[in-house]
Image (cartoon, rainbow, N blue to C red; front, side):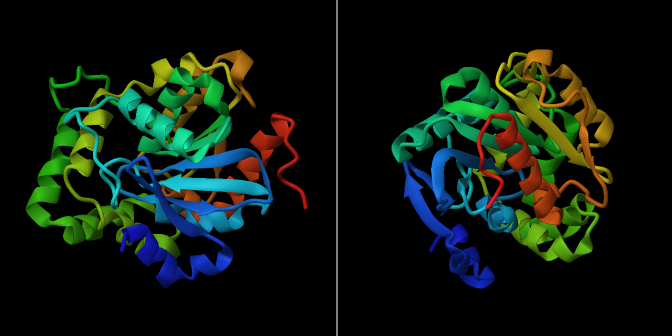
Length: 290
């Protein structure tokens, strides 16, 4: 049984209509919506998984058709071929998944490392993207693939190898949250990481260039982060928001969410759901009202 399927059992998410699936070598969660005109695609961060989006999937209006993937190398999803992939490599795998599922232009939501994947997908496959929401975005270090691995990134891999995933998660997860009630779920997700997926994602973080990709986007873009985020602080997220071309801005500044840390979709799922509805409204999609 996949990790996502186990979470569905233990959280009761299946009772909310969320089901597991697999296509093109990628495991995913799906909450069918009443209106399939523009689906929502959720891309998790480096220490997380599809199941971390269950609270958000439950909070989203029932009209939205929602997919959350386990990124390559996470859960039972097949890892990427490259040991040191780029964000574009993840974007290609996402394109394969959405093609296999027959999903057309989507609102793509990227959290943390998932923001690098979302922006690369929107830049390389604009015909498949209606709009982008970047949550607590990781910007990447801009190193050359296969070259120097930034010290903080290398430390992640060393700590995981030295401590094992459960102790690694116990020590790192508290820094991700402001609302401690979600700490068990955040810790659970981080404890599920494994090689080679986590190593590939870490190296992608090393060579990521979010600002370059964001500046090239022409679809509507919205950027948000938690006011108490210690991982991707508000100043960094504000830089991302300011890099969005004026033609693509849903608003001119960063959306700052009070009472939330880095685990924004888990800590404040209702607010994130409202941001998705706002983006849908900007696109002229009536997906936020009963």
